[in-house]
Image: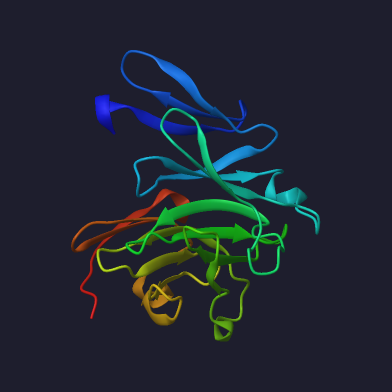
Length: 214
C-alpha cells in the first residue's frame, strides 16, 4: 500500500489496524464482531470478514458479515443477507479474496466440525455461487485458504483431503491441481505468482511448485 503501510486484523482489539514504520492507528472498529480475513477491494478500500465467535462455538444462530470500507474507515456497504430471499449470507467468514470480475469469494465455516463452503458474491450483494467440494473425496470439506489467478480462476486449499481445487469464476469445478499423491499434506495457505505456487502445509512445511494451467 502507499507509504509502506500494512493492514492487519486485530482480533483481541476488535479492530482493523493500519501501521507503517512510524506509527499505527485503528482504522476501523469491528465491535461487536472479531475481524478475520481482509483483502483490498477493487476501489482501493478494504473488504473485511467479521465473525461473532470462535469456530468451536459455532451454533445455528451464529452469523457473520462482510464489510466494505474505505481507507478512512468509512463503511461503504455491509454484506449480511442474500438479497434474493433475505436469508443470512454467512455463518463464519474467515478468508476473502476479490476476483477479476469484481465478485468477492469467501471461505465460510459452517459448524464447529469445520465443514465449510466457498461463497461468491457480486458487488450488489447477489449470491453468484456456493461451492461445497467434491463428495467423492469422502472426508469433511475444510477450506483453509483461497486465491484467484490472472484469468479469474479460483484456487482453494483443502486440509483434510490434502487437495488444491481449481474452479472457474462461475464456481464450476475444473480440476485438482495438487493432491496427496503429489506429496501434499494438510495444505493451510496458498500464494500465487505468474508460474509459481506456494503452499503452506502442516508441520511447518512450505512447498513451492511450478504450475502451468491448461
